Image 1: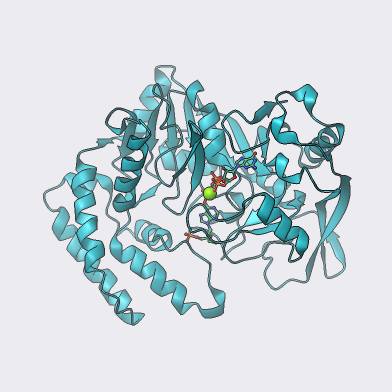
Image 2: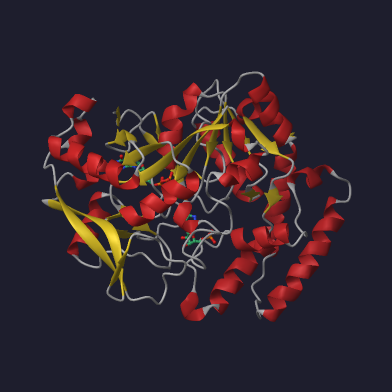
Length: 420
Ligand code: GDP
Ligand code: IMO
Ligand code: MG
């Protein structure tokens, strides 16, 4: 069977930490979408590691890791990541597999991402500029190069054909930056990629399931950045929700068992786009400082605000979430009161539905105030230790979103998690 861990907000909920925590219970951890726009932070022997494309199970000797067909892969970044994880003792020759169907991010995809963002003026997405959008466009446009293609003799001619197509688009954008250095490192990285375990990903996963092995699918980004259900057009270009597991790994829906959604105890967003509960005041700044809310991939300060239960409930609905993990509970330790958004006021009308389009609306969050717990929760070890006001906050959320919080994460460390 397959369990899934995915983000329920705008990303950076702590998916990497939680996947790492559960990974030893699984035979395979598989990324099913996204690419190097993701930054998943985990701690190995107390040292911080940020993974972008390699699944967060890589530090568990008995767990193999698959980069699934739904991922867009930058081989240059992969090569660097492989060096990093090897320095922490991971063995990629034994524990990392890549699907033949995984799409390749070319240097020109990165250039196109940059050119496209520049052309948007005030309407910038705030992309990580890793080439994600242009690569998925080539996938759906039926032009893409895939990992399996690098094993073919005609790979170079396929590359040149696509590169010429991209050059015309770049010329249209008047993009003149010299990317020949990017191409040199790309081909070096392709040589390296050829040495890794390239597999038929669908059979890899389904044969394992047939043998009774356990698979954990690891999501990147999150529901509100989903290409179909996020705050479009301020979204990423992939299916970040549980449905994406089926198309990204080639597993059938009935093989999926638990869908574990991750939410912070408050809310953040990095990049542009609607964020109803965003705080532009001292409280927002306090959340950013206490929560160290700076992007794991780009270093950008994250926008911070109170938890948005309307969006969270929507995310649970479209994902079919069976269990929730609430991370960063410790970040709220010092707050006197906590606000939780339980409705949107749109032009004086209250709603508990996420509107089709949030941009340009006169939308105000409606809050219910909850009591803070004023306890150092980062040192707590078990359910019985939790302060009663934190338990009340959790119960309030459970009731609203109609899904149970089963774990509370109370610090970035591997052991800082409490089962409820
Ligand atoms: P991901 O993209 O969902 O994997 O999340 P990121 O790694 O981008 O961001 C989460 C950040 O919060 C990282 O710096 C984690 O080390 C940190 N983190 C995760 N869980 C907790 C927690 O419970 N408390 C605190 N204080 N930090 C956490
Ligand atoms: P993880 O997996 C937070 C955001 C970008 C931008 C938008 C589109 O670490 O949670 P893209 O590079 O995909 O063209 O960017 O999506 N974004 C993320 N925000 N966490 C992420 O991943 C993100 N990946 C993309 O900031 O607003
Ligand atoms: Mg992240």
